[in-house]
Amino acid sequence: MLQEKRKDLDSEKQKKLLQRMVAELSHLYPDLYYQPTSEVADLIRRHVASEAKLNAEEHALLKALSKRDIEVLLSLH
Image 1 (cartoon, rainbow, N blue to C red):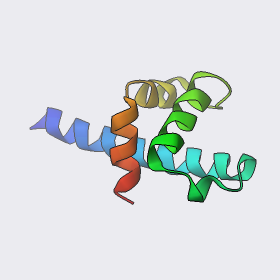
Image 2: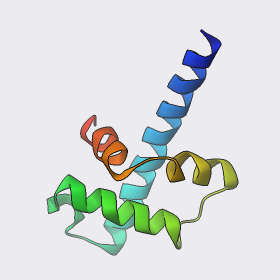
Image 3: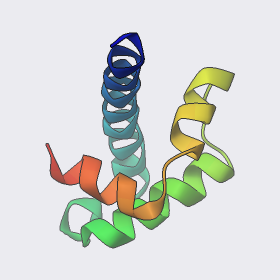
Image 4: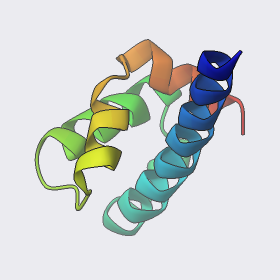
């Protein structure tokens, strides 16, 4: 049960981080809103791997996500 709560907490943190990444990237790419979710997920993965300003915990939370995981989490908004 404690492990399930931890997963839920991590999932919520990941959603918030993804929202933040989308907001940051939308400043750099004004047409981001019109891009397919798969392209946004790719852009987020590249951003996390290169220049994203994340602390160690945030980086670990997002690095663990696959492209498909990111797509699913983005589609839940």
